[in-house]
Amino acid sequence: MRFMIIVKATKDSEAGVMPREKLLAEMGTYNEELLKAGLLLAGDGLQPSSKGARVKFSGDKRTVIDGPFAETKELIAGYWVWQVKSKDEAIEWVKRCPNPAGDGKEGEIEIRQIFEAEDFGAEFTPELRAQEERIWAEAAKKK
Image 1 (cartoon, one colour):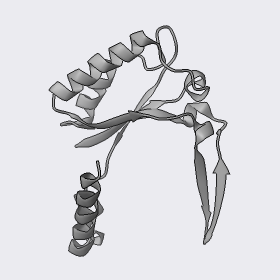
Image 2 (cartoon, helix red, strand yellow; image 1 turned 30 degrees about the vertical axis):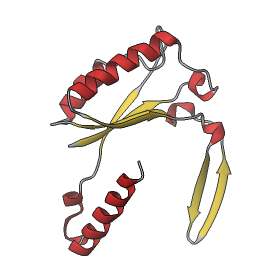
Image 3 (spheres, rainbow, N blue to C red; image 1 turned 90 degrees about the vertical axis):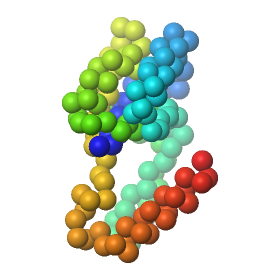
Image 4 (tube, rainbow, N blue to C red; image 1 turned 180 degrees about the horizontal axis):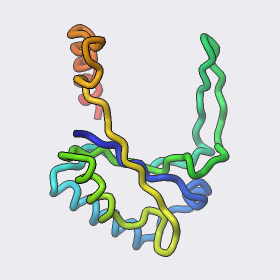
């Protein structure tokens, strides 16, 4: 089972305030633990939404909305992708994580399971599966 571990944004992360050295060191140690446990697949921090954009879809129309975006609690400041045995295992690992907002501040991490090919059933035909595998194999070469 793969899960995306989503670090929610804070007023500080949205303001571009960089983490203190202590938190960077704690997160580095935590990432080492995830790696040694064999569950870390990917992860990164994200720039503030002021440097981003959204594309709104309405039928065939596309509207671009530049950041920043108002609802900080709904925004993402970073993420990991983990391969674990269960949601419970993901929860236990998140509980071990240093507070991503820093000491004494409120932080939040969301845990979401990633769809696997078999989750889509018969609609995901062998041809579509082959296309998906080819795309991701090609993308992996560019890392």
